[in-house]
Length: 331
Image 1 (spheres, rainbow, N blue to C red):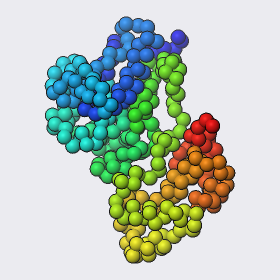
Image 2 (cartoon, rainbow, N blue to C red):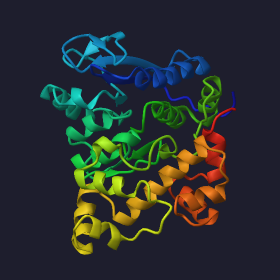
Image 3 (cartoon, helix red, strand yellow):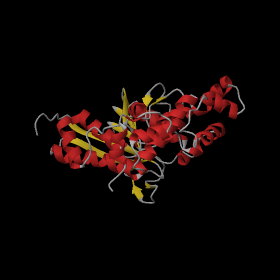
Image 4 (cartoon, rainbow, N blue to C red):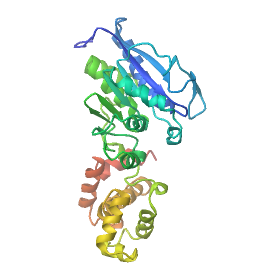
């Protein structure tokens, strides 16, 4: 293999896991790094992988119930780590995390070359105070929650992963593999990373953005009461011309007060909320119907296929036709 960059010495990759960890958060990136070892074919370079429990117990149960036997816990790890990655778990688990974990991560952050997270592992780094002022990403479903909990962080839901200096955060689940390929390319060059990507049947750099896979708006049960009321009001009226004056009047509020309160509660303006509602409806129609793109644009209240295309490119970096081809599936 030509132009392979070989840094001297094995790099220790540490994955921190908690109960209810999602297996692919760990298994996916681990397969990238272990595959790299095979392609490098050099016992003096590559990676050593360590799974470390964030609890006193070495056996941690994943969200599928499968037990993971860790080599170390945060209480007995005794070696230097080059890269430290926090895997995701459920948000409910984070409510009961021992403060020792955050002290451990803070201490580790001063000793490693790279610190990162997979999926909602970003919440753990945020609570440890390590993401203040940083550009970060997380699973598309939880990005708004992360931003609301930690307003000092700059959350961008679109990228599959983000690097901000020595901090690396990745999006939902399989995005950990996108991050691992980027770290591999950083360490040993593009040829090795490309070989590993081909072997694992992955894009070296996946096209598009995270929001291709989820809704533009937060889940309904994560919305505030006012946001739910607005969504319920508009969901059957998207084909119509809708004004902020109409929404505010229906909510028995002045336009100014409604706009202020809605922005505070939802994190976006009423106009942006409406645009995202129309985007989500258009995505659904592209996936589950055979309507023409012009008709979908009309039924979503976007007027024309040109406007629909502009909205898709703005939010998803895909045209409506490309989205339909990618997500409608085989018939």
